[in-house]
Amino acid sequence: LLLVMSPTVEICPGDSTFISVTPSGGYGQYYYNWLHSGENTAGVWVSPIESTDYIVSVSDECQTFTVEGSTSIRVVKPTADFELTSNGYLFNNLPIQFLNTSLNAESYQWDFGDGNNSTIVHPQNTYDESGIYYITLVAIDEKGCTDTITKPISIEEEWYVYVPNTFTP
Image 1 (tube, one colour):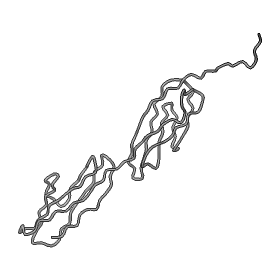
Image 2 (spheres, rainbow, N blue to C red):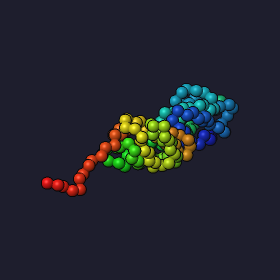
Image 3 (tube, helix red, strand yellow):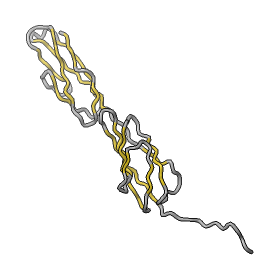
Image 4 (cartoon, rainbow, N blue to C red):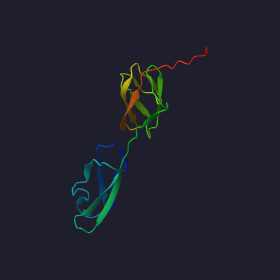
């Protein structure tokens, strides 16, 4: 009894895929047992939350041969993350630079929390008003899988320090 299994595939978290086995040889019809679910068909739909190996046991009608085969489903996604390149206070009316530190992504969607958006890898944004803003970054990989992160930043009211350049006693 010879088994041909579905090839290894990569899917996004939450997606499903169909896996199957094609037997040849042996005697009469085939009997299937997918060990993860007990299903007894040549193919099954799976939706793993993490990378998983699926094993099927196939026997022929005479129970002369019983063979196991396996296939792998890899669950992959990018990891979204960012930080600010500005240290200290963040002021309104001054540009703030965002450093994208995402992994395994090829495109990005930024929402700066003030109505402004960007698709640039390392964008900057200027906030007109002081306050707390929630920055959201969506990282997208080549298969369309996504990961999202949201972080707050606090924008201070711009203030000035007057430093005299002369002194009169």
